[in-house]
Length: 138
Image (cartoon, rainbow, N blue to C red; front, side, top):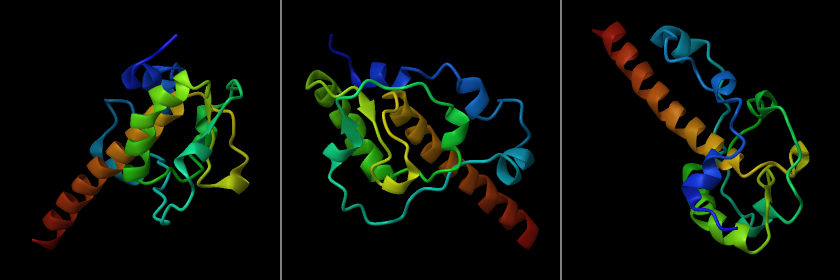
């Protein structure tokens, strides 16, 4: 069975309401209290193929992922573009290859969508924090 990148990103995100901010959360709470993983700024020397594995994904708690850095935006973009090809090649799980000591392996492809969303939320948060700083400085 083949999937599009969009379909793969939506897989296994049934915990979405838990791991993403509630739309009714105040801007202040989102900016200062809502936990988001950091984005790894380390120059990636890990081959993209190392993120994909033939093992079937295991169940895991998405809340655990909030404690670990996500890859950079450019790496995530490449992984998402490559995901359908990897799936068709028999690779059905993702690992945190950028953090080998994390032990996070055999995760569902939906983690790619999670990583993408974390980067988007961090970018939104930065804009709000910049606006807050501008207001405080004037």
